Length: 121
View 1: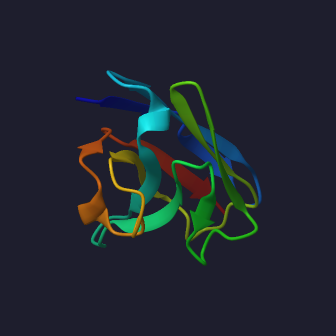
View 2: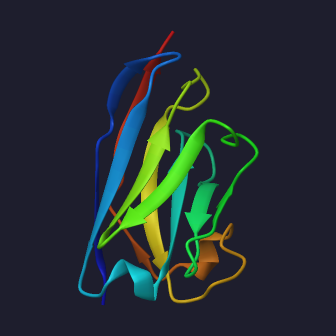
């Protein structure tokens, strides 16, 4: 069993930065691949990025060059730079015991409660 708690969301101006954190408890983060997803009102939950067992990260096209995922001990971070008006959403972290197809929500067994990101123009 893994418990995930996100933090770090908030209001930021367009062009600004935020760093989201996902604290994992129950098992070490290194035993799971970790993903970040986001969901805006009225839209499907979408993949933002993920980091696999080896520490390799992949990103959705929407965040390439702007977002970066890193992990340390039992915390996974999502650094978001150059935030755009289309980035606001509730951001979720998730843990997967699998190490492939991490862009799909179905690969994840555990989810956090989400943290709201708002971008003002």
